[in-house]
Length: 506
Image (cartoon, helix red, strand yellow):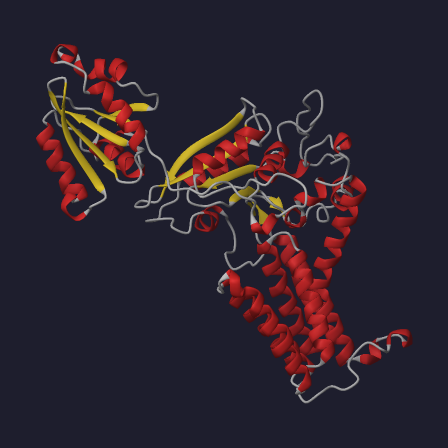
C-alpha cells in the first residue's frame, strides 16, 4: 500500500468506545438492521464483535466463542492481543487489521471483526458463508455426455471448480477488488509458465485501474472497462463460459480468465471469431463425429448470416440466377415488398425470443406455439408474409441457435440485418459492399492485440486445419501460437514460443 493511501486512512484507537463511535458514524447501526453488534467480555477485557447478518456462519462462530469464553484474566494478562491471535482463536482464516477503513471493507465482505479494548488492532475471522446455489449444468452450454457442473454466483466455488481440474502449482488466482462503492471481488486466473506475461500484465493493469462506483452487472461491466477499442463494435471480443471444463482447457492453451463475484460467467481472453464457434460436445465424442458436428455447426452459422440476403437478392434480381436455379424466388411477390416482409419477420422472431425469455417457464412452450401456429400461419394466410419468407427466416433462426456463443449469434443477427438493408436498397452492389464492410470489420477487430479473424487473416494453414477438423487428443501437441504462450508444446519437453514473423505449425 502506498504511503499516500495510508495517510488517508484512520488508525484504530486503543479505546473500544472510541472505535464504536467511529464505526457507528460510518455504518449507522441504527439504520442498518443487518449489521450485528455483539459486546462481550473475554478474559476480563471488553470486546466487540461486528458482522453482517446471513454472511457469518453461526456454527463456526459458536465453536470459536466456546473456546474464548473459557479464558480467564490471567490468560490475557500479558501481551493479550498476540496470545489471543496466535493461541486462543481456534480457527484457520484469521488476520489482523489496524485501519478503520480496512476493517469496514472486509467486514462488509463477510468476515467477522473482533475488536478488543486497549489495542489498536482488530482481528478478522473469515467465517462467512454466502447464499449460493449448487453447481448445475449451464443452459447455454449443455452436452449429451460430460460433466454436469457449472460455475455459480459464488467466486470461491468457481475457483475451486477450476482447481479441481488443474492441480498445477503454477496455476495462479490473483485477487483484485474493483468498484469504489461495490468493492467487487475479481480474480485473474492463468498458468504462470504458459500464459504470455505481457497479456497477464495488461489485464492486471486494466482491472486494477477500474475507476467506477460499482459493478452490479459484474462480468459485462468488467469486460467493457478492460476491453480496448470501439464499444459500438457488435463482435464479442471476449468469450464467456459457464463450464469449468471449457475454462480449464483455455487455461492450458495459454488464455487468461477473469472471474467476477456474483456472476456464473467467466471471461476468456483473448478470443477470436473461431473461439466463439467451439463447443464442448465436439470433444465429448469421437474425432470423426466431432468433425461432423463442427461442420454442421459451421454450415448453420453461414446459413444464419448469408441465406436471407442471398435469397432476397435472387428474388429481386432473378436474372442473376442460372437456368437451373430459376425455381428460387417467390411465384407471386405479394402485396408487401419482399424486403419489408423480411424486416417484419426478423422483428417478429426477436419479439417472440424476448417474450419467451420474459415468460415463466411453464408458459414458454405456449408462447412458441402461439407464435408458430397462430401468428405465422395467419400471416401467410392473409398475405402479410410470403410462405418462403417464413421458411427461410426460420432456417436462419435455427442457424443462429446453432451458434455456441450467444453473443456471437446476436452479432451475426445484426450483420444479417445490415446485409438485408444493403441488398434491399442497392441490390447486387449493396451485397458486395456489405460483404466488404463486414470483412473489414472482422479484419480490423482485435481482442487484446490478437487479430480477430486469425487464422484466416493473417493466414496460418496449420491452425486453420485445427479449426476445420477436430483433431484427436494425442495429435494436439501445440498451443495456439497467436496468443504467444511461453511454452508452445503441450506434450513432452517445453518449447519456448517462437519470435513473431516465423512460421509455425499451429
